[in-house]
Image (cartoon, rainbow, N blue to C red):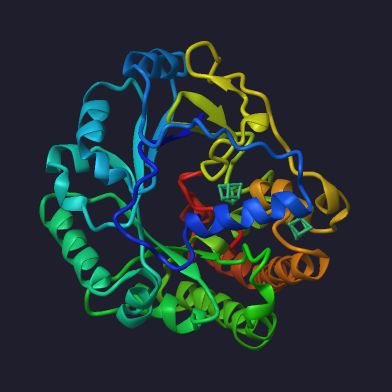
Length: 376
Ligand code: SF4
Ligand code: SF4
C-alpha cells in the first residue's frame, strides 16, 4: 500500500494556484452545494503523534511505500531524517517544491526511489507562478543531489494554467540546458468553483491545451520511433501501458483504493488534499490495518461515463466537493476525452513499434501511485 505522510501544513512558497486557494473555494462551495462536508478545525498544523504508532502501523504491511508530503515537507527535514532511518517500509518518495533539497544529507536523499519536484516549465513561467528565483534554486539543488550520487527518478511536476503553452513547457523541461527531465507529469489548475468567470479556461483549453496535448502525443511517439526510447511523460505513459495491456483502471492517482494519506493527527484520509475531511477518514494509524482499508470510490456522472475505465474518475476530491457547475465539469472532462482520443489514435503505431522491436512493452513499466495523478 502507498501512504502519503503529511508532515506540516506550512510552506515556504505562496504559489498562485496552491492549496490555500482550494480551501477558500471549498468553504464557499460548502455553503452553496456541499453542506454535508465537514472540515476538522482541530487538525494540527504539524505532525503531532508518537512516531512509534506510525512504525507499528507500517510494519503490518510488508510492502508499504511512504511519500513525504506537506505543505512543504522539507521544512521538517529533521523528521524526514528520523523517519527514513528507522521506518519499516519498502520505499520512500517525496513531493517537494525543491527549494530545500539541500537540507537532507546524501545518505537520506539517496534512499528515495522517486523525488517529485514542482516546476511549471520555463524559468519565467515557473517564477511567475512560484516566486522569483525559484527555478534557478531548484535546478541548483537538482544538480547538487545528482552530484552527490542520487541516481534514481526525479519527476518534474508541473501545474498547468492558462499561462501555460503545454508544448513549450513540456519540451523545455524535457530538453533544456539546465537539466533534462525524462520524467514529467502535469496537472491542470481546474479547481475554479468561484473564479471561473474571471478565467479564460474554456478558450485556452480549446485553442491551446487540447491541441497541444495531441501534438505532444505525436512527439512522444515520434521519439519512440526515432530514438527507441519511451519518455516518461506520465499522463501518457500510465494510460498507454493499460491500453497496450488491455487493462481497466481505477482512479489513477490511487486515492481511496491503493494510496492513502496519514494526516498530522494520525487519521487516514483517502487523498492528501482531503485535509480534515473527517467524514471520509478510513481509520487511524493506532488501530487500522494498512492492508485492509475501506475503499472509497468515485460516483455521480463518472458512473455513466463511456471512458471511466480509461480515466478512472480523474479526481476523488473533486468528485466529492464538486468545485464547479456542470458546464465547467464538462470542460474538464473534455480534456480527458481529448487525451483518450489522442492516445487511442496512436495505439496502432505504438503496437507496431513494439512488434518491430523498436521499443518494448516493458519500457512502459513504472512505479504506480508515485505521486503523479496521471489524468491531468
Ligand atoms: S471523463 Fe469525467 S465523467 Fe468521465 S470518468 Fe473521467 S472524470 Fe468521470
Ligand atoms: S487527483 Fe484528486 S483524489 Fe487524486 S490525489 Fe489529487 S486531489 Fe487527491
